[in-house]
Figure 1 (cartoon, rainbow, N blue to C red):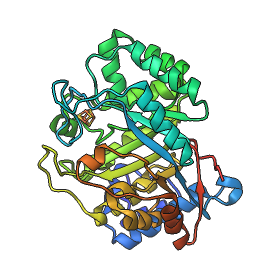
Figure 2: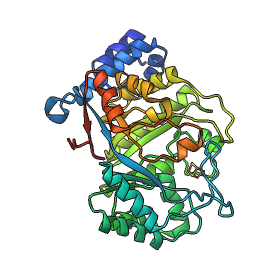
Figure 3: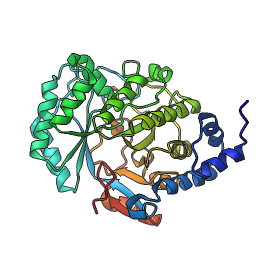
Figure 4: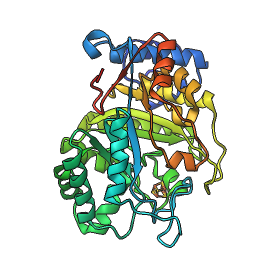
Length: 363
Ligand code: SF4
C-alpha cells in the first residue's frame, strides 16, 4: 500500500528539490499564492545555482528577436486563433524573400540575433519553397538563428510532402534551421485538443516531432497555452508529458506558459487572470525539474505581471518581440524595448543579460 503523503510532506519534498508526482502537484496548486511562489523561487534557485559560473541566481536573461509569420494562410482553423486567413481572403499573404531580408536587416540593426519563424499551415507551399527560404536566409545572414516551424507545422509538412518526419527535419536542418519553437503545445491532452483545435496535431504527434528534432540535435522550447476549456488536472498532465519527453530526449531548453487571449477568436471560454497565471507558472517550475529555464510571458500578461513572474519560478523575460502578429490579433498589444526590459529586471535586484537561443550570455 502506498503511504499517503501529507501536504506538509509534499511541500518538504518540493523544497528539498525532489521530483513530485501529479497527485502531489494538484495538492500544491491549492497553496496560498505567496507560498507556492516561494516554493517555485526556491526551485528556481536550485535549478540555476550552477549556471553562468555560479551567478545563475543573480541573472535574468532575455533575447532580442523578431517574430516572422511567413504566411497567414492556414487550413487548421483553431478556435482560439484570430490570425489565420484562407487563400481567398484579400489580406492573405505569403512572404517574399525580399520582405524577409528587410525584416532580418531591421532585426540585426536592433541588436537581434534570431528570427522566430512560424506560419499558418499553407496547403500548397512545396518543400523546396521552405528549403530555398532557409538556405537563402542562412547564406545571407549566417549570424541569425532560425528558430522555426512548430511541431504542428511539421506534422502538416509530413502530410503535404508525404515524407517521414526524420527526413523533413534533417533536410530543414541542413538548409539552415537552427532550433524549433514549442508553439502549438496548447494542452497536451487530446480531449482538450479535440475541443479547441480538432484539425491540429494531437499530443503524441506534437511530442514525436520534438523527439525527432532533439535526436537530430535541434534544441526546442516547450509551451503551454492554458485558461480555456482545460482543468487544472489537464495542465498537470501536460507538464507530465513534457517532463517525460525531456527525460527521454533532453532537448527542451525552456518552458513558457501563457494564458488564452480571447478577443477576435471563435473559442468561447472564460479566460483566467494574473493570479492563476502565476500559480500555474510556479507549479510548472516545481514540476519540470529537468528543464533549466522558465520564461515569463509579459506579452500576454503585461510588463508588470511579467516582472512579478520572475518571483514565481521564471528566470527569463523572453523576447523583446520586434514584431508579434498572432497574439496582437487576439487583442493583446503589449510592447517593450530593451531599456524597459532591463529596468524591470534591475528593479527586482537581478542583472539583465541578453542571451541567445541556447541561453548563452551575449553581454
Ligand atoms: S493557431 Fe496556427 S495552426 Fe491554428 S489556425 Fe492559427 S495559424 Fe493555423
